[in-house]
Length: 193
Image (tube, rainbow, N blue to C red; front, side):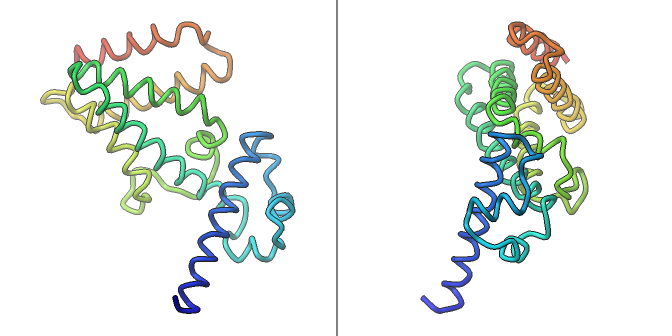
């Protein structure tokens, strides 16, 4: 291995450590607790080393969001594939449940993806591939129930509904005990068209 390859590998490992530590700290104490000073202390690097990888907290949030988007896309695809024997409505239900479960299990990551400014743009050509993959994972299954409709638009509305359910439930605005009934209603209306 060349010196250049080793340095690139070490740099990538430092970036993974920074992102993992930021994510862990945010999940434990919230994003307000994530500062470059605290990250530097936890990973035992100087703040200038952190700044050589990320210009600040915003870029770190963006990196966590991209990682989360990739994980969510994989979970959505797995959920759809796992429910393949039950028909399109059952795959949509599994997709909705996987989305809501991800949001519940990873609140800080979910916030990085959809609530905080990580410098990422959605729905434009420059949208990072991980974000496009997440939407595509939703759209692939929703298209099965969209018929001759507009699967991208229907997927946006479905995603907005899931996001609203995740956000309002987490904030205590909707009782958590009714989550399955809400998913059933949403999927039922979606499948009817």
